Amino acid sequence: MQYRKNRVIKLGEVKIILIILGIGLLLGIVFSRILKDSYWNQMEVLDVNYFHKIKNATIEYSVLFRYVLWEIFSSYLIFWVFCCTSLGIHYIGITILYTGFKSGFFISVIFMRYGLKGILLILGYTLPQYLIYIPVAYLCLRSGFMLCNSLYHEGKLSTKGKVERVIKHTIIILILGGALFMGGLFETYAGTFLLRKVLLLF
Image (tube, rainbow, N blue to C red; front, top):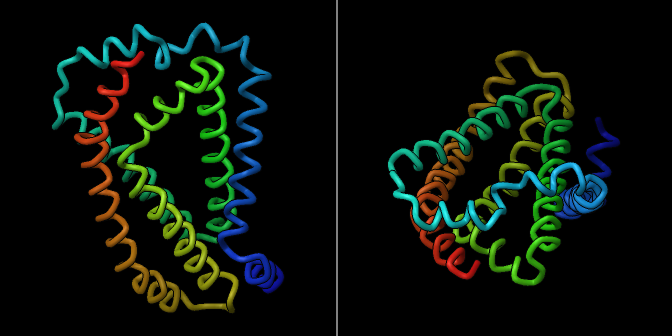
């Protein structure tokens, strides 16, 4: 749709992403406080006893790495499948909103439970892998929008024309997939090491 395209151009891709992400963050923070009584005593993953298990567990890194890659690439594949459909732009918007909501909820809960000390916990759970994941996520959102827009909103294309557009995006999809693979390596090894060191403070 030309109107949607004009709005994106006028506001800018980064601004639109930040606005939707910000709305999700705000909703996550609000709901984390509204629903506090329903989950507060059931948060095992943020409990000190759970931290103790992580610190002392024997980790099978090959198993953990396969799990991390499954989590990453199952979502990655679904994202690009949707971007090849007419629902792609809507899915991108929902993905950004949900990511913001989940992040806002998580951050809010950590601060409610551990105060400023929670900053260390957030860093332990996100570094160094998110140094890769964040720019890759932005490039995915941008490329996914461009693909879906070119397939369905810039004029009518034949099936052959749509296939050609998708093939043109294959290189960027593979490159970003390679970056995510590296992020998975960082998360499995460096991220686990850093998290266990941070948890020694709790």
